[in-house]
Length: 438
Image (cartoon, rainbow, N blue to C red; front, side):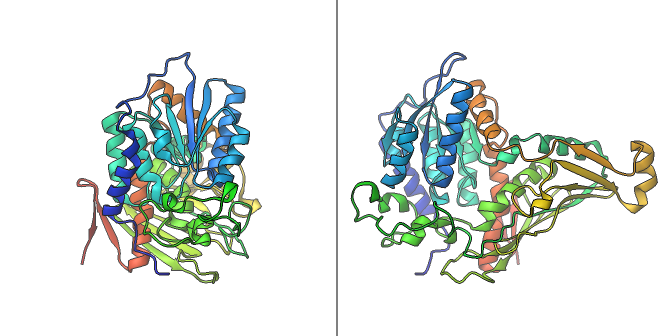
């Protein structure tokens, strides 16, 4: 079945209205969380990532009893029942609109397919809730603009699920870059690569298809397909699209928005700190032949106004992508892979090596011919959740706020458009607008 280009602006606006339709009677803002109050949280979307969020919230609560899990929401009854067994005190919902109507909920975690992110985030903010939304922040860059502006207007806390931005790694790297040690940064590169012979997003318990499940089923096997589709094109039940949504453009940007987001966001935080000026995407379906639409090998390339280029190249059929480097005129920072990749490239330090013309000066200033920076490895997911919950209480900006999510979306989503349409895209940061040039 042919897929539409992407969720249209009309569909997005309709979904935004749908997302807030049940909120008419709700107050404009939620309750104020005091220093001694517990934060009431809910999880919307309880697939693989949503269950991860639930587990992380339970871990947070076990060590610091300052939250209550009061709501769980999913269109698939089996997933909802599984989650309810972990958090029996929470009320369960099939429709997120009903959950968002509650004025006692302070924050929601959104782990639905990408095409619902913007509408649910907007509805949550309008009902006075703070939001932790999985990456990508939205399905399109235009949606991200709306979300970022609304977050600022309503003074809501929005955390995008790029866990690496709560590690010690990236503030340390940003400080090194700003110190001038490596000179002017001219290029950054990275990867998020895997090798899944049976097809990435096919393997594992969360991606396998339950043949008994669907909209016609009853009990735990029932799925509200119409609600799941939301702003996406209306089509008959398709189990592969439901259980393996990242393979299809209507619900995901594939490698770019699922994997590259984790690499692009830290690099934009530490080095670029701006919208891209020019973006291109290349790649293809070189190996997988299972009917998917999104490519198994993909390259995001972008230029930034502070005179540097970014290339993120990933594959789902080869785990050895290009090493993560930040390349300056005087030295290069060599980092371990941000996520996954070969075991030999998972370590918790960075090496800074001088360029040949700067070797003598580098050794004189640093006393060695290289500098090793320790403590810049993977520190897991809980720190990002903790950071969000702390910001819900303090009203400070979290480590991956909506304005950064907007900038990252401009890079990753425009690379998808470039790949699909065979065009190079430009972004006007002053007008916050996508451009095509002859």
